[in-house]
Amino acid sequence: GGIPIIHALQSSYTGDIINEVMGICNGTTNYMLGKMEDGVDYDEVLKEAQDLGFAEADPTADVEGHDVRAKIAILAKLAFGTTVPVETIPCMGITNVSVVDFAYAKSMGCTIKLIGTAVRQSKFGEHDGALSVYVSPKLVPNDHLLASATGCGNAVAVDSANLGTASYTGPGAGRYPTANSIVADVMRVANDACPILPFPLESSDIEIDNDYASAFYIRISFRDGLGIVRSVGELAESQGVSIHSILQQPISDRLAADTVVTTEACKLSQVQALCALIEKEDYALGSPVLMPLISEY
Image 1 (cartoon, one colour):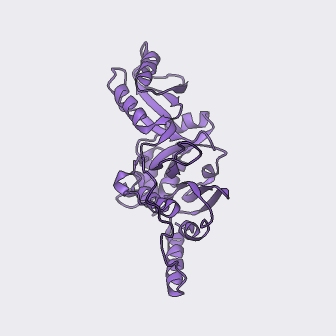
Image 2 (tube, rainbow, N blue to C red):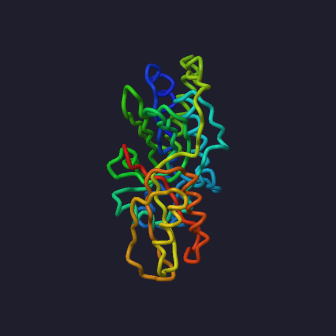
Image 3 (tube, rainbow, N blue to C red):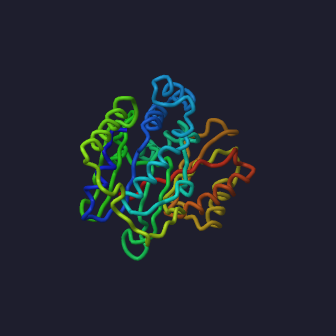
């Protein structure tokens, strides 16, 4: 893409401490999600992205989040000086996101973006704990700076001790933005303007814990019946998950309906265990769709 974020992390934070890097790092999926928000189905928008040259013939790296996973691993190394093996990074793509999720997101004052996150968790104070790195679609409040990245645009937000939150935005897909970045790198090498150390920060004492904590959105597809809300509440309690709210659009088909549960902050593993239990229930029509949501910023 066209954002000079690597150069910024190499040179602009040497006297600062970064707490979090969070960004939309794939223009193809951002374009697709924007179209889905307008009501276009996933399969249709994928074909459109391929026809426009935004998506490859095999779109797996984009839609499954693998491209973002590789990028956030690099950004985490630059920001925190810690190598996070790519294969250990939890990664959810956009293939399970549907227009139904956008309808619920809209009712919550949010949109949905595929986001790579690298953040120091808080243990005793603010951002003094383990480093968590992950990729997932996220519910983003409409007034959050990442919500403003539209089309195939990219946006990265860096939160640090001295600067607070700084944002970097620009085009993230297409031949000209990509070519511009490549030429800029070639010129930097030709002019001997590259930093001596590509990763100037080195830290070996930061614990890595990718079982990250967040508030979560869980969409449950179900066959209507009595006691479903009670069942979900009991299963959530069994996994130590506190429910924040329950949302439901009017039911038009009792054999195929959806409801949404949002949670208080909890671990990814707790929500995954909850979804696995819900999937086993007779009323469930499949595995619930889960996404972290940005609730504090």
